[in-house]
Image (cartoon, rainbow over all chains, first blue to last red; front, side, top):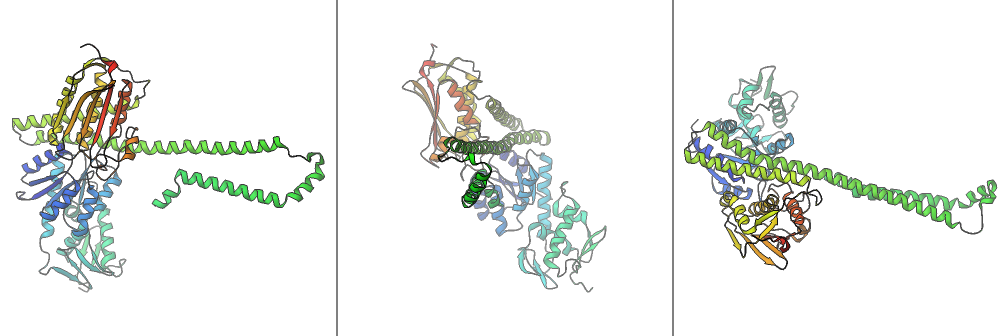
Amino acid sequence: MNNSGKKILVVEDEVHLAKGLQFNLEREGYRVTLVDNGQSAVDILGKEDFDLMILDIMLPKLSGLEVARRIRSTDMRFPILMLSAKSADEDRELGLAAGADDYLAKPFHLPELLLRVKGILRRWEWYKEPVHDQETFQFGDSWINFASGKAKGCSGEFYLTAKEALLMKLLVSQKGNIVTREELLEKVWGYDPQTETRTVDNFVARLRKYFEKKPQSPKHIITHREKGYEFKSDPKK
Amino acid sequence: MGKLRALFHPIMVFIGVQIAWIVLMAVWINWYLENNLAIKEFAQEIRPDLFTAEIQWLILFEGCFLMLLILAGVYVIFVYWNKQSRLNQMQSNFVASVSHELKSPLASIQLYLETLKYQDVSKEEEKDFVETMLSDTQRLSGLIDNILQSSKADPKSMALQFQPVNLGEFLEEVVQGHKRQLEEKNCLVDLKLEASPTLNLDQKALRMVFNNLISNAIRYSPVGCPLNIHLHKTGNYWEVNFADQGFGFDKKDMKKIFRKFYRVQNTDTQNIEGAGLGLFISSEIVKNHKGRLKVSSPGRGKGAIFSVLLPVSREVEA
């Protein structure tokens, strides 16, 4: 993947770390903008477009968690890689729940960070490819707008989270074919060793609750034992 | 969840126990008064000699004393319990802050080492990276010093080694040591020395004090804020002022700022790292020099002035 031109916003108040990140990312061909507090991050995102944000949690003025929440309230898909010295499981969960696509604890390995950045951007690129001629994908009584993340399910209109939308898009783009759990894991979660295949099952269960009238006997998202999942837009076929 | 936690706060539990105890006591007194006559008659049948016309003051006094003793006992248990729970909370906050404080410079050192390993860098870049890593190791070393010192920051156990130190030259040297940090925050230092006395000081300990005060001024100020350091004589003291134009703090924080583990919490400072040890240790060190560490702030957002006062009696011939 060609990295040149990809814009990354690094939100980090530790000057040394920020400069080190900038140096390495620029060496990889990215264009990097540095800001040192949460409020400036929100402000600059309102004015400029970026392809990815690397976000620290402990930030002056506005914490990284709050920045992520604010971004997610208006944009469900903008890629966020959270970087923090907080490495406990609950901190990680908190970061992901606030809207981060990935979470890396400090101190981190440089090659791992660069791979994760590449992975998030690759998934983002893939996600931006059109899945359908029309902007909104219709199936049964439900529909999904992959551009905005808005969807209509059994209980009305709502917004899908970034991961839910990505997972749904992957299934829809290969409708009629079985998509393995491994492929879903790789494309939606990247090569994170901490993610288990059970995570995919949990997300699928959530999607069924949104779109299936009877989640126990699904018509659209079908399980193929020990193989993976298949999406059917027209259950009769 | 928050309401439930507030309900089980030690003070709430204490008040609850006291209310329950007093209510039970009132119920018992009420029952006793209602059945007083019957009890009296019954007792008179068994032990008529027990009843006298006058009030038995000694027994009454003993009863009251016993009640007071129980109350005092419960209060003492409550005080210690409260103290213990606060200590536990402080300890977990401290561990979280310290691990975070240690990890940030460590992450930076690892990043630069791996940059040198995986990227082609020029000689100048290499030199710059090494300087950055040295600055991070200095920060780590300062934090470790603070932690070690905090465990013995007790006026009796602090063993200081006094030697003649030229205060002016020493201040210049300490400021020079923060050159990189100051440049990174675009912070200009105005060091004003009205004199340069030689005092009998523990140089290593005083370096910790000045390092802590300068680091705090840099950390708790936005980019581009100047720092004024002024050495002058005030009465019987040599006074070194560190005046920044940073986030400052409210009056209520001023009294607590030198407490162990205490950290100023407001929207400007909430995410700034720190272990809450630097000012506590600095204050103890200055006290051990028979001096004082003073603080003042006009208010939030208006900066702060920390003043180290060292007695003139410490002055020695250069």
